[in-house]
Image 1: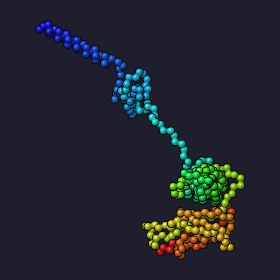
Image 2: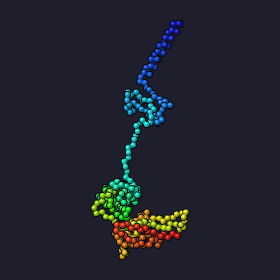
Image 3: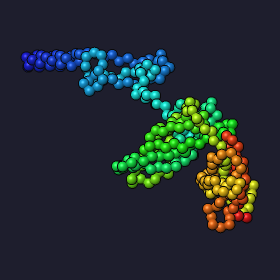
Image 4: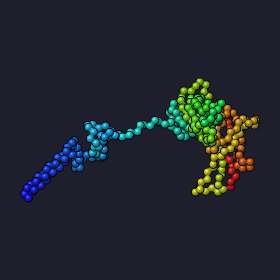
Length: 317
């Protein structure tokens, strides 16, 4: 009995020794030091948790590859910026009555205007006279062209007009008053299945280096309105006159028709005319007697823009 007990204790001691050796081998290797910041002495800057890796799929780190490392606490201010976005390229200025510097590319929609700094000129994209471009999804014998009309108004009352013809919608240049205008392109492009564009965007550059022989024009411009629009006018319920689209016919003093124009959707119009005396005869698109506007005489002086607003009587009482 005593012999068996001694052998049992010996085998137990040998088992514990073997277990100790196995455990020692498992924990024998590189040690990892984890610094836990003392909350009492921690810096006031924000703290973020950063996870690094040294496996074959992660970013290379210094030292031997020992598998995923434990997260480390580091101050946020010490980290390099991540995924910094590049500074976006400047885009052309746009918008009605925006102010631009000379030699800057600007994009204008129909009826938009820009003031060119230090020149006194305001340049407006007045209308698209023609758009016969070949659609981009077919082949044409002729590439077509786009003709646009620009209107320039100076602070001293001078007015200039310019029609640019852009082959296939490409570059074109011309002189507008004291300015040189370089059109770069026009959008949108034409397609067979797409309807005719309802609006256009014109890219151009305006400079103060005019070509020789620039011409400053004279003429008449203004706005056409119609009113009253309500049978009863009340202070607490405003009912202002509205823009009106009408046909405007210009005659000279002998009664001969000189030109005609239709006011735009916002009621504005502009006609380039040589100096002289004229009569403006407004015509309503309606075949009835009303709306009605009386003819008005006006004078055009050299290099001056005459302003004449026209009011139609709606007949609402």
